[in-house]
Amino acid sequence: MLISDKFPRYTEYNPKVPVWCITPNGSGLHRFFDTSPVSPSGRYVSVLRMPDSDRTNRAGEAAEVILIDLHTAEENVIAQTFGWEYQLGANINWGADDHSLFFNDVDTETWEPNIVCIDPISGKKRRLEGSIYRISPDGSQIICANSTAMRRTQDGYGVVIPDEQVPCNFGFRADDGLFMTDTRTGKRKLVVSIREIFERARPQIDKTPYEHGECYGFHCKYNPQGSRLIFTMRWFHTEEPQPWNKIRQGLEYWVLTMKPDGSDIHVAVGPEQWRKGGHHINWFPDGENLSMNLNIHGDKQLKLVRVRYDGTNLCAISDIVPGSGHPTVHVDGRYILTDTYAGEPTAFGDGTIPLRWIDLQTHTEQTLVRVNVAHPASKLNGSLRVDAHPAWGHRHIVFNGYVNGNRRVFLADLGEVLRG
Image (cartoon, one colour):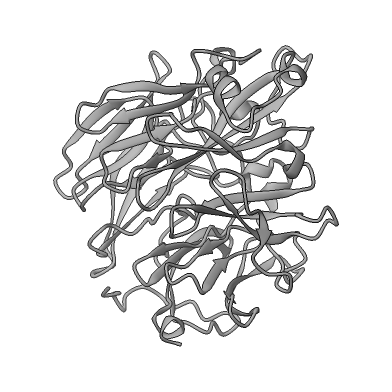
C-alpha cells in the first residue's frame, strides 16, 4: 500500500509503528473494529464527516461520505447521507471491489431507511431496500437489524428518524429480527424473527422471564468464510411509554450464531454469562470460534475469551493479559489487536489509550500507538465518545482519535511488527 507523504505523520508518544493522520483537513469517523475502511485494492479509505462533534444528530440532518486517496492524499465528498449516528456513522462497507461502496441513508419524506451503493470513482448510485450493518465477504448479501429501533437500547449505531416513528417491540415480534438485502436485486427479506429465535435457538431459551418486555436486534457480523453469522439481541423491561438508550439500565443480552439462511441457531453467550460483565464479540479467523471481553470468573476482571459458535468450550484466551476495548484476533492466530476505553484499567488515565498488541504465545503485550480519545462532549451523551475501533486493512490498521480538538482518523503500518 502506497501512502502519500502529504499526509502528516502522527508522532505523539513515539509510536512503535509509522502512523499518518488521513483526515488532517477536518473531522472524520471510520466505522467499527470488524470492517476495513480500506478499499479492496488498498488505494482508498472511506470515512464519514459529521456536521457537529458536540451534539447528537437530529432526524433529517446530513453528513458527508468522504473518499480519501491514499496515493495522492486527495479527499473528495462523494455523497451525503441522512442515515447515520455518532458511533458507527453510516455503517460504510466496501463491496467486492473499489467500485462498490455501501452506506445507510434515510428518505426524509417517508422516513424509511435505504441502502446506497455508490461507485466512488464514477459517482454512479443505486438504492437498495433496508439498512446495512455488515456485508458478506463476497459482497453479495447485506445483513442488519432494525436500524430505526436501535436507539431504544443504545444511541449511536443505527439511523435517526423522528422519535414518534421509532417502533416499539413489545413481546416476541414476528415482523422484526435479522434482515438481509441481496446486493444484486436490491430486495430485502426477514431472515429470522425475534419470535423464531426464542422458539428455535439451542440451548432453548426460557421465554417466561421475557414475556413482558421489549426485545431488539443489534450487532450482526459474518464470519470470514461467509458460512455463519453473529446476531445479538437486547431485552429490557420497562413501563415507560417511550424508552430510549437503555444501555445502562439492566439490559439482558444474547449472542446468537446461525447459518446465513437463519437455520441452526445457537446461543453462544447468554444473559447468565453476560450479567457478569463483558462486551464486543468478533469472529476468530477460523470462522468457528468467537472472541469477546468477558468477566468469565465473575470477579470483575475482564478476560479475553474464546467460545465456540454453539456456546461450548468457553475459556479464557489468556489469564495473564486482561481484556479491553475492541479485540480482533489476527489471521495468524498468534496476536490480538485491541484498544481500550478511556475508563478501563488498561488506559493511561489522562484521556489517552493504548493500541495493544498482544502476543498469545508469550502472554505479553506492547503499546503500538498511544492516542487521545477524550472528547468533552461525551459527558453530555455517551454516543459522542470517540472509540478508536482499530480495524485491519491489509497489513495496516485504521483507527479513530480525538487530537488537536477534533475527531481524526489515522492509519498505521504494522508490517514491521508482523514480521517479528
